[in-house]
Length: 71
Image 1 (cartoon, one colour):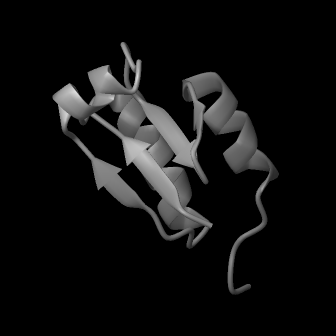
Image 2: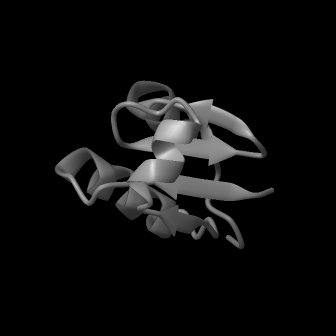
Image 3: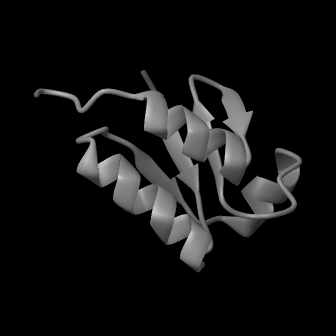
């Protein structure tokens, strides 16, 4: 699974980053605003999971449904 956190370092971005880390989910963080804009992302954070983009609410729901990896 390829996971990218599109982040500006805002409080909501940090919530998703913390949840990803707590669940031991490997991800890359992308802070390139120009790239976000080119993908149609107008607000941060967004979570990309295998090419599917989720806004904060959808990403938070998805993360809450994930089991902790390796545990």
